[in-house]
Image 1 (cartoon, rainbow, N blue to C red):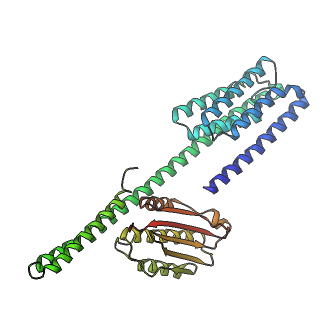
Image 2: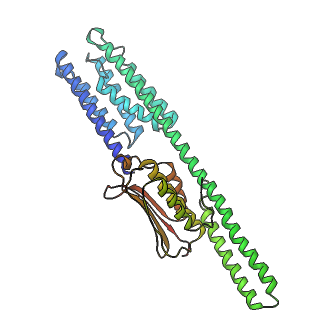
Length: 373
């Protein structure tokens, strides 16, 4: 999503600023004590590993292995040529970012090996530490950075796993809800077929024409039931107030009216004819309910909310918008939209949720095929 990309860009820019500051401070400190030429090897290594840390999302294994190899080479060069203790603060920070990124996203074995490599690089600074020159402090900083990187990576990994579990639970709950709707849809059509079959049996001998009409109705109801089953079962593959499957748009009107009594004013637009399949109507209800719940949770001070349901030749378009601004726009989203998108895409439709193009509020827009094609 756009907000996620902006967050990642901002985090990368912030990290770049911190790394540049650390490199600059380290250069000044070494220039004042050892001389600037002693900083060049370690400075070059810090720049290289820092650049890898900034592009770590593209290829985590390659960037982490390459960064630790450069950091390890800097440690070896410091000991071999009697240079200032490495990794220095900038190099330690960049290495910690690479280790934390690997621990967060890579498979456990690969993440463990990279974390062990990072620990080896950090530990390599201890034999080269010079207490009189502040080497012990640099070595301790390396160990602290490594620990912070691993801890941050593990914390984010646990949060990511929790989010995945929650999202999967939402999808499972949505499938169970669709299974209940499937039962209602089939029961609705089969009941009609049974009634018409009984009528045909009663009038067949006395009025064959009427019996033929009943048989035609049974055929139509059976075809509709099969289409509804195919569309709903598509979401039930393994990969609190929902309306019954035979509900009409009057339930959307009731939903909007309840919201009006507790939230911002709502303007509702419905088309004149609403002869859609029951699974389409129930999906529209769910979209409106989730969108209005989002408004109540994140934008209770919105001045106006619009619910617009429009009929197209082969689809139904529903859009719920509000005019909230600022933080109310940036903090939207959630697991409810995951279930909605799962449902809409199972019916062959599309769903988009995000800030409005003019930036004045939020919009949830879904296009749901009406099943008549």
